[in-house]
Image (cartoon, rainbow, N blue to C red; front, top):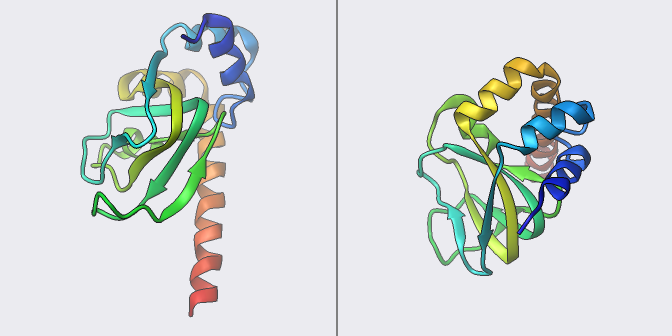
Length: 148
């Protein structure tokens, strides 16, 4: 079980919330929900409803773009402090990827409504998220350029 201090430290050291002052981080930590998944589980699948964003406390997650349940070619492997599931809570579309548990994982999650409230109160979270998404797009552009 993740206690309040661990949640606060995880948020403070995450790329998503790292720029927010400690007092505000503590208020965010109070609303987070803890989840645990075992190796082999899937947290969500392509096409699922997007209503949660997750931050990894421990363990590893693999992100795949295949609908086949047995296909596990990962476009990203995420670890402690990384976050995922943010796209759907921003645009309200269905999941565009599947999140596989590679190693038992402890997560904290936040709902769409809670996340939107945080962004309104802390625009720097949105800037952090946009910076990360821009980095992902650049990486994908480079991979596409190499493939052609």
